[in-house]
Length: 396
View 1: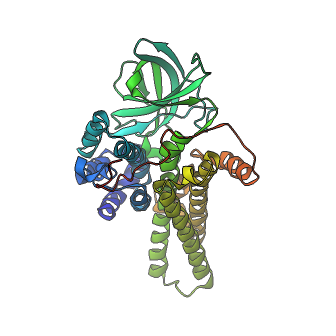
View 2: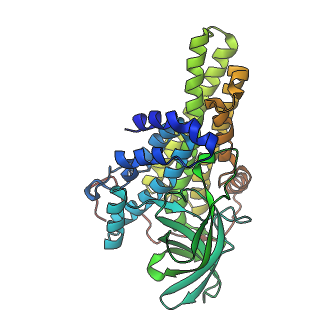
View 3: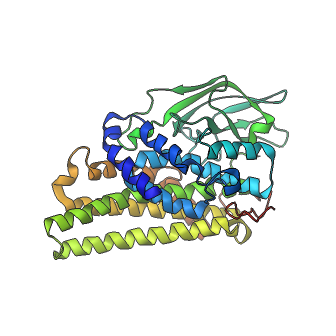
């Protein structure tokens, strides 16, 4: 399925990149195929995939169109988190949403990032307690999926919590009163067609039942590792690796067309690219196994688990940049033609090094973990082990 989707998205990618328009046609193709339900359990109408499937399929989709893949990645990873939590502790509200996701009626997106708060351990948005919930105000950046999402996940600080300031993670409908997508704020050189517009929250009511997580500001939360970080880091890495794989596959075709197969530099470059791609794939897939097997929070400290998933993302994204740079050197000046596969890859792949966890933040976390330096207070997850959502026989 995803190979066909990747090929069809690839045929439209240059058009959407040049115009910086959201790839509605490509996203509709994902919906019609059932791909939006990839990480929904089979008995709820989905395809029954999990994180191990997602790192494979998202790489292939991104090889065709990076912007389409990155947008749907937000949705699929969040749907997978919801499915796993539902499998562990079933409830009717989650079941209804998962069925709507499988039917293509619900599209999940995220708007958590803010300038000065890159690690999703703090935020400038504020939540005030009211009857039945909270009133939230703030400004979010990088609202990937804002063009198509029906529900958004976001964050705000409840400073008046009796136990100290708490970071609230919540999900609300995108059409909730006070939510405004600020059209025209996305103007970038890479990932242009994602249309990741800023989103303003102006006195938005968030009911208590919409709050997914709450933990002390600045802490390392085990629930966040199980959900957001555990699913997003490997799949972000897979998307950016897919950008590089797409460019590399075009490069191999160009080499054959030019009759350059016997050139020493060509062979050296191809070998280097292959080693970079395959080592990144191995780490991503191993990390996905560790997330699905609960190893990152049962066999490790929360910081060690965080460092592990961040390492997978950083290794994959940096290897992706290295592959694209080598491909461009090999192809030569033709790779600089505006709108070419190589031109898009050069611009798109570099977003990976800045996408949280950025290289700078990741290096601080990984090095501190290796040296035994505790970076923040840890909080264990509410449930030490989560069920496998791809197993229809598992009920608890």
